[in-house]
Length: 115
Image (cartoon, rainbow, N blue to C red):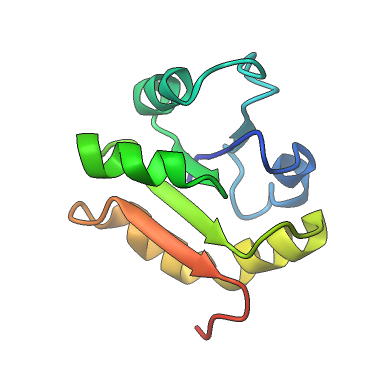
C-alpha cells in the first residue's frame, strides 16, 4: 500500500511505518515540498498513492474529481508524530479495506475513534 504523506505530516512517518506501508513516501522526499495541492493530487494519481493529510482541501478535491487518488483525512488536530503513527497502525485493517474498495474515495480517521 502506497501512502503519500502531505506537508502537514512528518517525513519520519515513512520510516516509522515502513513495516506496514512499505511503499510510502512524503511530499518533501518526492520533490514536492513547494508543490500546490493540485500538483500533489496529480502526482499521487499518476503514481498510485493514497494521500494522507490533515488538510480538508484534499477532501474537497476528492468530492470534485472523485478518485483516484484516494484520501485519508486525519481528523485529530496537531499531534506528535508518535500519535499519528499509532493512529495509522491501529487503523491498518480499515485503511486496507478502504484502499481496496473501489466505491470509497475518502476515509476519515479521528483521534480516539473506536475500531
